[in-house]
Image (tube, rainbow, N blue to C red; front, side):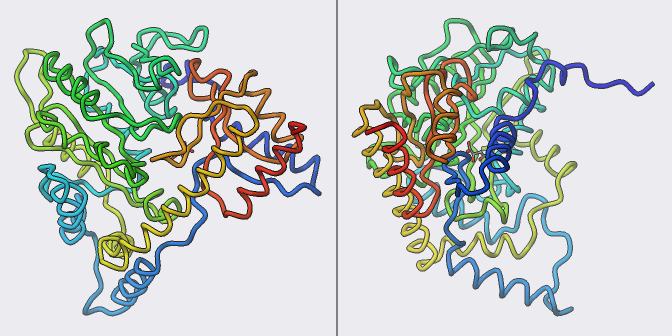
Length: 408
Ligand code: MLT
């Protein structure tokens, strides 16, 4: 008899964004006349930068000639891309990262979801609340939790992120081994200062723990004092892995390209306490289970580091940040308290009512899709997240409709 992984039965019915898509589809069927404006899932709407398109085309042409055709590429990614990443994203900011510590992949969702499988089933995991659901669900699938009860899984150390702590969690009271952090944060849009991030690095060093640092929204940081990478913090190379994505950076949500940095100094331990290289483990896993991102996509990704590519990316991020500012100001004008929306494409709004009730109200009365905060964890109850990823026109229309719907 073929038996299932029983841990899957502990998962909540479906993935948050699939739930939302179903509700939106039902609404659209009932109201075909309403043009729904989607400010829910963080999916970009601006095109790939022109520099990427040109590089993409050139690489496709190379694939059309025997002389320049490429088959399987290096599993860790082509050196031409990894070298640019190490230089522009890290060394230029004084962070020590070498090209051979970069693993190119097809997404940060996959990498943050897969990374936990390197570690023992009985480690203690610390996960923020609210949180990008992938970190939690993949640990549930791996059997690291007990049952789900009152919005939380037993066995997980939750790091509450609330208005009181500025949505930056404080160190856990109990010892933990694996820590997930995401800054600029999804969903709250909060950022972390260097001294606060250093507290986490010091904690990980003191407890022989590992930090999985999701920096998928790093490109939105505009305040000079904020760290873009955890490797800007002394001592982080030994205790942190960093995830970056081109999805929001350069519009690769459909094209797929991301990368993970695993420093060679980073360690985990055997049951006997023997130091083991996390880089070697991830390399083993990556080369066994993944065959690389396609050559044209990696060439397109490389193009974001050219002078034109950098300015085209900057223009797109400015555009989304301006959207975020308009959303934040409009919601504030309606009397709502907002976090995020600066150094982040997400605005985290205290809806003063249950998250799903506010979600339904905006959908039914304004035809606007947001994301209910409680979908990211119980600390998100009462909040909604609005994403800045849409056209200026749609953002302005959405805000007008929300004003009308709320009777302002
Ligand atoms: C989000 O809306 O939270 C993200 O777009 C989801 C993702 O990047 O997978």
